[in-house]
Length: 269
Image (cartoon, rainbow, N blue to C red):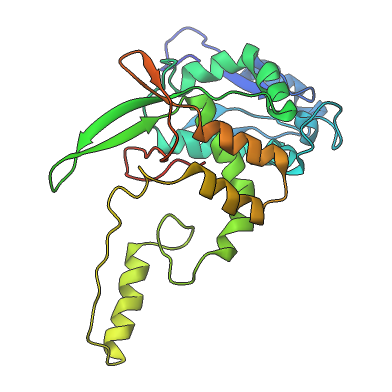
């Protein structure tokens, strides 16, 4: 997509997802001319018009032939959900994954690649790319291992997260504050302060060392299956857990652990 401005006429390109679920590129002039015939809206993120006019039919019929029987996947691939997911991925920024494509390059890549990716997602045959291994120093010594997914996989993960979070979050403990919407460390401190004000004087500080590095995939999937009755979603999450990690050009299998991003957060899936 063109960046910057010049005295010459420069067309702003929009990445679109049409009713057949196919990404395409359209100039701003074309979009304006077709506006009366289109019910979609242009999503704007980061000062740039992007990834727009995604209709509800972009994910195909509700009971599409050959899909994995996953109503949640169909919900994740609706117009509104994909628009929101892309805006979040763009806002989070982040480096390229193993394919070397940044956000704008991935947008262009999806023009041709999305129909096949979507078909694989719905049929249960999609295979995520391995994450790119990066290590950063910890403040207290040692190193933290990070895994950087491709932008395409970050988009899919974010879209799925937005569908799953309203289902899973209410099942979590009311005393859990990490990695949850509308909860934070500051919220936990306020609750702790209320305990002190009520007269409690004992504080127990516990840290599970390398917790995310040691998460059991089998236990995690078992817990998810008890809460999500959707084989397609479970299959996709398992595929992400098993996608492996690439270091120095070599893909290493992972049988436990979930990669974290540069903020120290576990990935969306």
